[in-house]
Length: 101
Image (cartoon, rainbow, N blue to C red; front, side, top):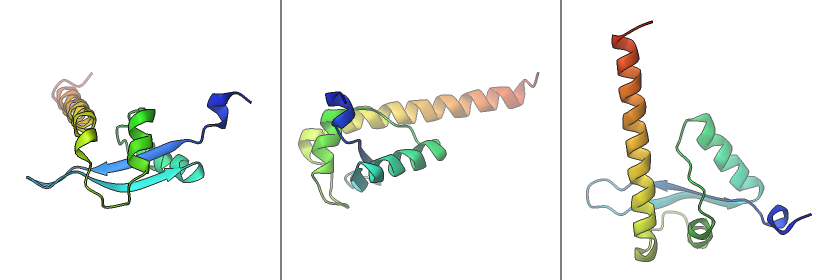
């Protein structure tokens, strides 16, 4: 077994804060629980980003914890990419509806 195979999977789900509210951790886990979090994310078309360092930092925090300042830049980058991907998906769907084959 390689070192990568022996490292447990980590997963963290983050909920974007409304208005000025901070983003918070809504789910976090290692191993089988992390796999379940990822499975649910993929099943519901939630964008997933692989970042072991950020996941390690965030899994050390309790649920409903506001994202710490040290991680805000990384989280902001992730959320910007998620919002852009969602917008692109909606635009593609709208274009497909307007121009059927």
